[in-house]
Image 1 (tube, one colour):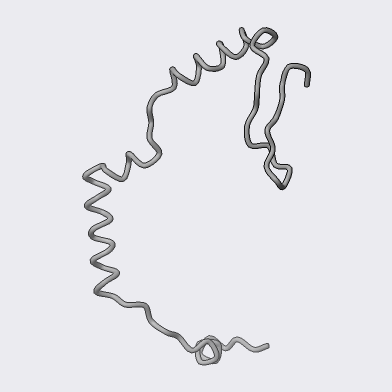
Image 2 (cartoon, one colour; image 1 turned 45 degrees about the horizontal axis):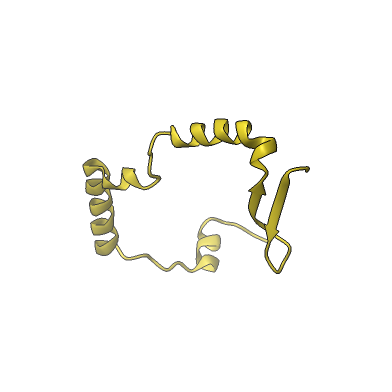
Length: 84
C-alpha cells in the first residue's frame, strides 16, 4: 500500500507500521482520536468488584475443602451398562 511501510520480524510477521502522514495524516488523526476517546475499560477491572471477589473467595474455599475425586472409567461404564 502506498504510504504504508511494515516492520517485520525474522519470521516475516508484521510487528509495526510506518505511516506517511502527508498522505494519510487526516485518516490517522481521525483514527487516533477515536482510540484516545475510548473508555478506559481495563479488561481486569471486574476482578476488583467486591461481589466478584467474594464469589471467587467462596469458590476457592469450596475447592480447597472438596478435593477432586478420581474415578475408574471402566467401573463407571459397567455401572452404566455401556458396552463397546
